[in-house]
Image (cartoon, rainbow over all chains, first blue to last red; front, side, top):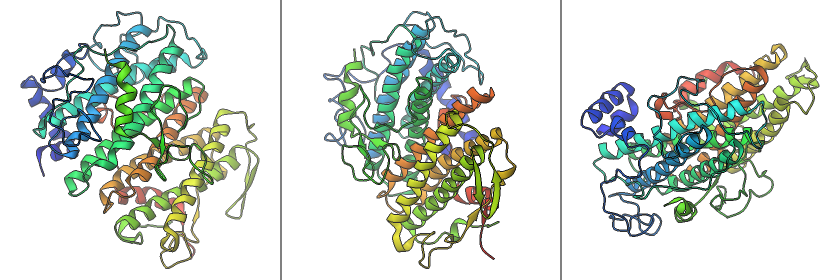
Length: 291
Length: 204
């Protein structure tokens, strides 16, 4: 069992590891310091949206994503998307709470049910007033969760001795609306793209050893939390729980039963199986968010 | 009650894992069917008359339970169809749950308890799929299993949100950043089977 395996299985050892990483200036504590910044990578400036100068284990399916093995590539692909998601959430939360869009995420994870130091200052927009408190709470909670996903993947890759994907040097940008509803509409599209991305990437992963299988399990476990986020945001927006095939602003979906780019076919309903997207499709879909 | 262990789930490798998933989907589909009856008009469940709570279809819990009931039944039918003669609920030699019934004491549950039970079972299902992944021999069915698992996760989050709105509860829709790095937790198959066993009744 390698160190990462131990970390994954054993929360105590994971905490000890995180403490060591923090002491070394590499882990969660360090990562959170530059959570609000657009840089922090150790690689030269990419010549494209995703750094094509990095060693590509699989340049066809994961162009510009570093890694010495397919599992490292997929984890870096996930990290690339989590960095983007965490940053867009940070911006969305800042806008919804009247802060400077560039402000860092406030230190410390708010207690369960609490929005911590954040309070909604924008109007509800399309969100029903009975649902607005929950909508804002989810925005706060998930902003911290996406940052935690990002930090977890960084630490995991570092513990494997793998190259670690860098943030886009110029940061990320999105056209957010000016009320909670439109801000969450954008978040919804980002989350849904994330769900499709994980599900589309997991089958590329090596499934040979027990350690490989556990990495796949971890990727799928992050994937289902993104699905939860997508569904809860859909709820406050008055949308169906999904999965939904056709979503504006979201990477094209393929159905898991046969890989076709189409809604689920009879006798199955549209919302029976989560759709997935192939990595190049996802990378193109998120390109407009790169500054 | 049926104390089934993962070792007793029929089939090897991928087939065993798919049969495990099918057992859970059959369980969930039947729970949803009974739950909708209890919340609405009532009806017969395992030969017992269950009184309905008379809720209108426009109530959010009724509406979404109906919607998800269809999805869970389709998950069950999909896996059952894919497994064919190897199915754990089929007529072949693997069909150890062919004549099983599922008893949730649904007739005694309040509206809140029904929604809570659905939430717990969906949450368990999400973790159960994760716990089963290392038991797959190949990654052939990974996308399908993940495609179902994400759907269960969606249901869990949505039901939590409905529960919070209807009954003022504070269920988390997803793991918080302070809980396992905001990542869903895997439950080993035997732990899941021990949890659902008391609700599974095998014919004498």
